[in-house]
Image (spheres, rainbow, N blue to C red):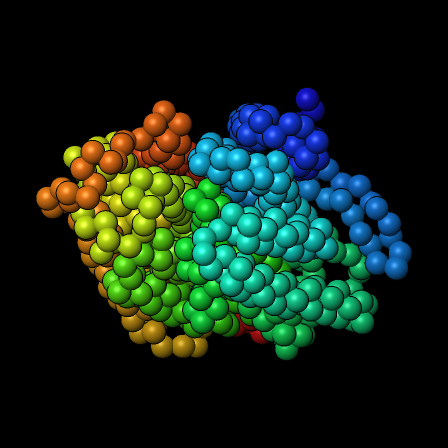
Length: 516
């Protein structure tokens, strides 16, 4: 297969799978979904092997013009190092989620796996799209399958959670569409050629507009992406969605959907409007630090396992905001690494929550009562490792991102050279550090209340350990957590040139403005 069509193949395959699963026997739908996602993992691996980490250009590009009038619309795909890492993450997490779907049983399996395949296509489309309209369509298409996956297969309050998810993220999409159209027509009014939605060209053209125009366009994109991230005060949809979503859907929601927001912040907000993000940088850092602490404090007062992990996601995605606002190569490297590491760790944690729920039929720590380690040793071992990764234990994936973001933010020469008090950046780092301490507290507290202490009489003889499929999923996620923690260059080699170049361009822009 020619390498330039591999990205298109990754989009077509799950779409075809959506149609095929709809017409094949229900008993074959799970096997078909496993086969499709496994093939996607193989193709993504081939992309990673063929990728040239030394090139700053988009690779595996394919471009076809659909029509040029009245506005140009193209099919345009390609990846750089950051996009490639998210493509591999998407393929892997989707495979793990399909394998983890064994408890869906006979409740409309054809529709369930069809929705998973459609969701896969839309998420993959976001990470490979180089046309802004195509990006928007893929970004919004995700709402349809995710809504039904929560509304049909979710918990008792699934209708409320699904509608809340839809309203929040749809509102974010409206803001993004407004930003897209405003940016395009402003470029047209100012006579800036070419008139295009090509994201590579827009990255060059955005900074040529008047500063107020850039700020307004950037604001639309920024709000849309921090709703998806999610960031305070737009985060309340996430815990409700997680609590009601089935386990595999929670894995996708935390592992992949949140990364659509963080990817957009880096690719579009930072890529199109570096001057505006430079102005907002200290406040973005402060917002990220506040998210880290706010999410951690919220975790301390929860008794539902899923809510704890959901608020933990809000906390950990704050590191992406800090890395974005720091405007240093180190911090941006850490932010991108956090996208990948959190994608794997959060998927593992939600999967393990599901393992406990399937056996105890409750997520309330007060009802479980602890003492599960003896009856479920494999669940306990994997829980402990995922806990240590989430709280940032050295040698595991979670530590790498947090350490790099802290270092890059605290030492960033640009974050402290924007006309604001450098103490704001230092205060943000100290504030975020307290969040890290709190994360160790709530994760160890969660582990203790689940597995330590005397065995509860009500569970004796009623619980069983992981089956073979569950061990396979947990092992697959664990291998990535350990591998990225021991050898982070496994992915940093791919995207470091991109991060370095972005920060170099911002530094040059800042110096030019000072000279002027």
